[in-house]
Length: 460
Ligand code: MV4
Image 1 (cartoon, protein in one colour):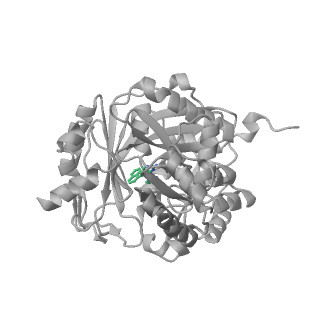
Image 2: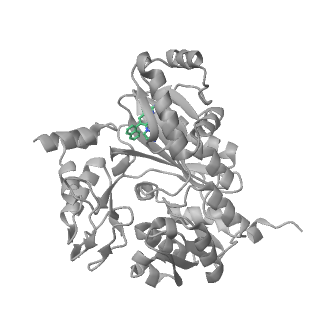
Image 3: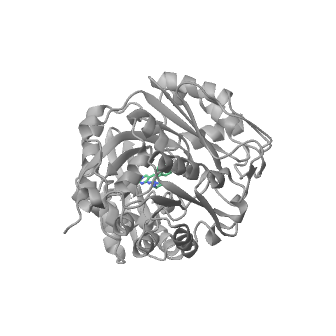
């Protein structure tokens, strides 16, 4: 007899969390709330981490270097087998967008909490991603959805058709890696040669594509969640323009100043794209937004660092929804149920030198975290915690929610004032200054704003 829906749902009762830090804590909480048992893994540097003590089982899988622990696919699969896990949650970073890993997890008879390996592979190749989006009616940056040919004359013709300035991007890149702006025709071939060589070295593929270069866009994301039964919804949008060197610093939901009737068709097109490619779980569509228009650039097939701002405004627990989708459950909300209430900000608190931005390792000697209505802190640290130099410098996420954007900003100022971290350097003073900035308060900032602001502050 074929499996019924209810029999296929709940395919696992134990989840191995293949990650560390705040997101390991966050995923563990969601698993417990769903009645699932958890398996924590760690590297030697994280042996003392509290997330190990709160899990049902805890295994050290390798040395401190991520390549030998959190990126060691065989060690993670072995740990899952030893601990009796039926599923693996990859979190973000590490193996979360590795199609080969998703495939290996499924081949081992476990559930990968994320989309299929084939969805990950389609979105990992930025040209096939763009083709899928164009086919679904998602607005894209002007430029072909095919790889650049080798013939110089054809390349010149494509650039002229798009119109300078153009940008050359590696199909295997993304997140700001492997791209080069071409202001005018005289440097076109040189730019292509350089980017090809970088792409070959960094991504093992010389495949490139060309787009119109947008000079002053904002970075706006649309969050989707899909089940395995042909249901998908979008949960609203975020503005992630406040970034430095492709590292986001502050995120907010909703993106300020975007009229609902402008973004609605874009959100629906994202949902359509998900249905067309058979997408499962959570996903993020990244757009550039300039002069009132949206342009798709990339899709992220993982849970994102900034998911909390969407949780605050939509009321949906995105991590729980993601796990339930992986269990085979039917999505328990329809588009008509989705609302956006109030405004949310997230500040990423990093252990870093405020002047040089270099990571700052050491022991947290004193810690005070803010609390109160509309304040949430996602963190894995405590007084006495040792911040190791091996991993990302993110040590906490400060999230606020309030009825309006102005009130949410005031609440973040209050939350930042109540945050004290001693023993290591952090970016808290810099975040406090940013929340006093006029243009930011007006919601008038593009993707270049923060770097310009830092330059002015250094000069002052
Ligand atoms: C662009 C662009 C302008 N025009 N594409 C950088 C990260 C990667 N996701 C895509 N990126 C960009 N693509 C076109 N056609 C400018 C950027 C970009 C950027 C995008 C989002 C957030 C911050 C950014 C910082 C510099 C450049």
